[in-house]
Length: 246
Picture 1: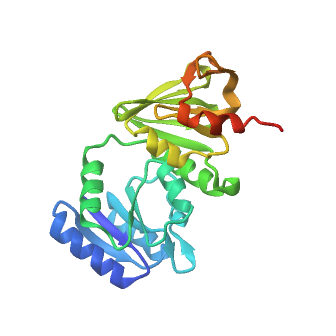
Picture 2: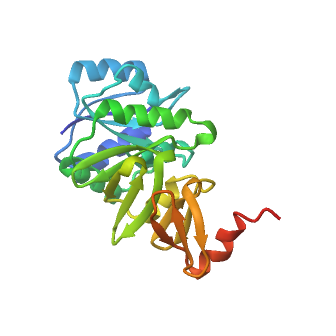
Picture 3: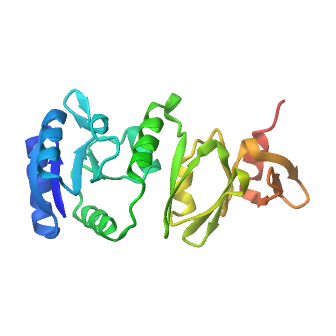
């Protein structure tokens, strides 16, 4: 897989290049760039299949690259030394990221995933990422739902509930939309706004705006689509406090 590295730190470029050459022999590094302008030229001349893109490049943001490639023909793996809000936006899309200093096992895992996984719609994926980056208070507007068939892109406000199904997650949204994601429910809990979504049970996350009724005797909630979601005894008090107007 032909690749390039975009990073303003030459030491980071050298470190990543060394790891790739040693542990990811299928990757062929065509070149490197230290700013967005050089990256655009390099992409246009080498036509890479994969771009390792630093989130913060001097006074620029790596996301600025998508102004020149709104529907990229290449895959992107973000690299960053900072666990900032942008990571939530990246996770909400189909993009992978690596924290610096890059961990060898994490890099290998990402590369294998890229080689095996079905591709998503690049333009839609870019739009989801950029919309979430611009969202007020960094809340997510849309989320990419990975499945064995590919990806579904769902408006966060439309999600009614998420139910654990082993290592997978069943997502139910408006208009009868149902998806089975390869992400576990804990990963979604980290992504979704806790002011909008509540983990009522180890197997359930519900959208608070879609709750119609709490059934005390059954310790379950009735949702807007008539689904019944469990409320565990451990979560019951915290859950009821959300609706305590006293």
